[in-house]
Image (cartoon, rainbow, N blue to C red; front, top):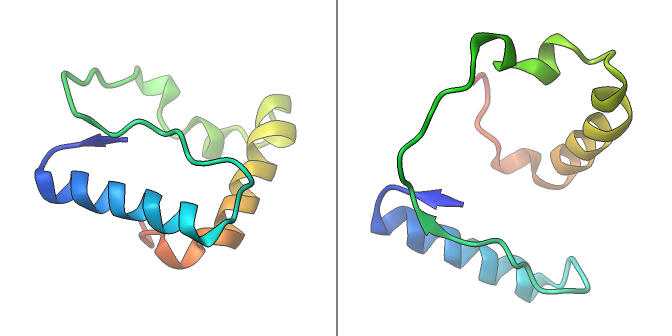
Length: 82
Protein backbone atom coordinates (compact mmCIF):
# COMPACT_ATOMS: atom_id res chain seq x y z
CA UNK A 1 0.00 0.00 0.00
CA UNK A 2 1.24 3.47 -0.78
CA UNK A 3 0.41 6.36 1.52
CA UNK A 4 0.54 10.13 1.07
CA UNK A 5 0.25 11.17 4.71
CA UNK A 6 1.00 9.86 8.17
CA UNK A 7 -2.75 9.50 8.74
CA UNK A 8 -3.01 7.16 5.73
CA UNK A 9 0.02 5.18 6.93
CA UNK A 10 -1.47 4.80 10.40
CA UNK A 11 -4.86 3.77 8.99
CA UNK A 12 -3.29 1.15 6.71
CA UNK A 13 -1.18 -0.33 9.49
CA UNK A 14 -4.14 -0.35 11.88
CA UNK A 15 -6.27 -2.20 9.33
CA UNK A 16 -3.55 -4.78 8.75
CA UNK A 17 -3.32 -5.36 12.52
CA UNK A 18 -7.13 -5.61 12.75
CA UNK A 19 -7.32 -8.16 9.93
CA UNK A 20 -4.44 -10.19 11.36
CA UNK A 21 -6.10 -10.22 14.78
CA UNK A 22 -9.39 -11.37 13.22
CA UNK A 23 -7.63 -14.52 12.02
CA UNK A 24 -9.27 -14.44 8.61
CA UNK A 25 -6.18 -15.99 7.01
CA UNK A 26 -3.90 -18.67 8.42
CA UNK A 27 -0.78 -16.63 7.65
CA UNK A 28 -0.06 -13.03 8.61
CA UNK A 29 -0.56 -10.24 6.07
CA UNK A 30 2.74 -9.35 4.43
CA UNK A 31 1.60 -6.33 2.42
CA UNK A 32 4.17 -3.54 2.56
CA UNK A 33 3.09 -0.05 3.59
CA UNK A 34 5.36 2.48 1.89
CA UNK A 35 5.36 6.17 1.05
CA UNK A 36 3.97 7.00 -2.38
CA UNK A 37 6.52 7.99 -4.97
CA UNK A 38 6.39 9.08 -8.59
CA UNK A 39 3.29 7.66 -10.31
CA UNK A 40 2.95 7.09 -14.04
CA UNK A 41 -0.57 6.78 -15.37
CA UNK A 42 -1.14 3.76 -17.61
CA UNK A 43 -2.04 4.26 -21.24
CA UNK A 44 -5.72 4.90 -22.00
CA UNK A 45 -6.31 1.38 -23.35
CA UNK A 46 -5.30 -0.04 -19.96
CA UNK A 47 -7.74 2.13 -18.00
CA UNK A 48 -10.74 0.19 -16.63
CA UNK A 49 -9.55 -2.90 -18.50
CA UNK A 50 -11.41 -5.39 -16.32
CA UNK A 51 -14.66 -3.45 -16.61
CA UNK A 52 -14.29 -3.10 -20.38
CA UNK A 53 -13.19 -6.69 -21.07
CA UNK A 54 -14.93 -9.03 -18.61
CA UNK A 55 -15.10 -11.73 -21.31
CA UNK A 56 -11.32 -11.84 -21.71
CA UNK A 57 -10.27 -15.25 -20.31
CA UNK A 58 -7.88 -13.96 -17.66
CA UNK A 59 -10.50 -11.46 -16.48
CA UNK A 60 -13.30 -14.03 -16.50
CA UNK A 61 -11.47 -16.91 -14.82
CA UNK A 62 -8.87 -15.24 -12.60
CA UNK A 63 -9.83 -11.64 -11.86
CA UNK A 64 -13.62 -11.95 -11.60
CA UNK A 65 -13.61 -14.64 -8.86
CA UNK A 66 -11.11 -12.62 -6.83
CA UNK A 67 -13.14 -9.42 -7.19
CA UNK A 68 -16.32 -11.29 -6.26
CA UNK A 69 -14.71 -12.80 -3.14
CA UNK A 70 -13.22 -9.46 -2.12
CA UNK A 71 -16.55 -7.67 -2.59
CA UNK A 72 -18.36 -10.27 -0.50
CA UNK A 73 -15.84 -9.90 2.35
CA UNK A 74 -15.19 -6.17 2.25
CA UNK A 75 -18.00 -4.62 0.24
CA UNK A 76 -19.04 -2.45 3.16
CA UNK A 77 -15.64 -0.76 3.15
CA UNK A 78 -15.58 0.03 -0.56
CA UNK A 79 -16.20 3.51 -1.94
CA UNK A 80 -19.40 3.49 -3.96
CA UNK A 81 -19.84 5.04 -7.42
CA UNK A 82 -16.16 5.74 -8.04
